[in-house]
Image (spheres, protein in one colour):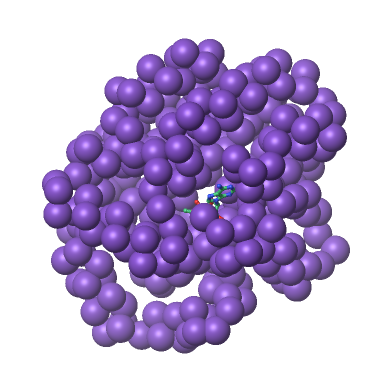
Length: 290
Ligand SMILES: C[S@@+](CC[C@H](N)C(=O)[O-])C[C@H]1O[C@@H](n2cnc3c(N)ncnc32)[C@H](O)[C@@H]1O
């Protein structure tokens, strides 16, 4: 991941969420702030990505886009809806249980830092320098005067997370939510292992809320499409271990999974309630671990 570049994967998460929430049934799963946030993100993306804001408002364009997506990577679109929905639910629940500060790793264009800063919870977002700069501009432009998350640049493994946490998260004793939505996928296994130990050492009571792509559960064709689509935009999935390996790695680093949702549970819970024919991406998991 080049630290001076816009993350295309982060941009397309916002674009896909924006396109999906043009449909009332999907939009109603989220509150108005969340839906409007991604509208503003897509509107503010650099040229030519910002044109999705215009074109995706037309149903035939959306239908074409959906058909093309489903042909190459079935379930990719629904996984976007699911990750935004489950992450919000899991973090809301933890905040209700008294977790008092939030760290968002690889925050990209997501709305969680702003959502919880708005509820008076100190939130720190980290991403590469270019992404941190774009996010700051976005929030200053669209949410002036509103409580904002702190946003700092950090590229792993080039920078030290431990030093940054010591300087900028001075209350390690506070119950802390660490959000890693679509982040670990870009790091080598040894970097993920070191990162988990750093988090465990720094915080007294952390809970990790994360996604995981177990690439071994995709067919070889879909795995090829997944990897190639990221490589085309200069990004590389480095992690991709099986969910079983990731569970063991979490456990060795002192994190035990509390909640886990795999593709079948997501289809059963979420997709059945929204009446859609679109499938869920195989190999996609969400979990919380303490
Ligand atoms: C797939 S995007 C996810 C963005 C956001 N969390 C979401 O789910 O909408 C991955 C994010 O991780 C960041 N990222 C990737 N590799 C990174 C690294 N080595 N160090 C820091 N950030 C990285 C990217 O810049 C990007 O914003």
